[in-house]
Image 1 (tube, helix red, strand yellow):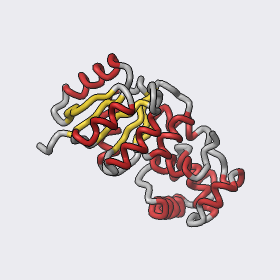
Image 2 (spheres, one colour):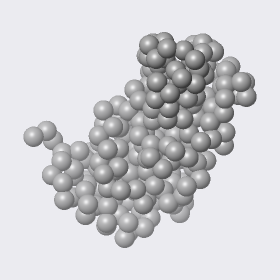
Image 3 (cartoon, helix red, strand yellow):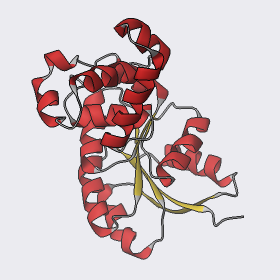
Length: 218
């Protein structure tokens, strides 16, 4: 069996840390190597603890999660940081994404999503919990309404931008083809081009890409 994933928990609520540590410790593929109740405490222990993944609360006393994330990645650029929050307001997630976080989970997410998020970010991807993904997808602009998105996506054609919106909204390739009155094969080709041009691997990554380029209206 491969070495267990080393995890640090950063959250100012000890009961939450205890609960998550208990769930993780029940699985031999995970090992909680450290805990911190604040950003400052986490940064102080980081140089002396090995870790692959960090679960980071957004709102903590003292240094907030986004600033802590930025500082941590300056010290250890290889860290995969997953946001944990009780807040459903997507502005917090865009702040954490800009700081370098790779995953986004609400604190009431099912533990299966925690497992999925760990696997995804360790493989180099981004993970957004289903509840937040649905919320963000519902707030997507159209390319015609978002000049900032168009300006930031010169590598995508107008048709690719249009298809990107629909992919992020959760439509299948066949549904996109039906809406745009084009063949599914054409959509398949456009989608492959979008993934290649953006460097994204899946819909969650594409939503992150859309946020970064102003396609999600916050």
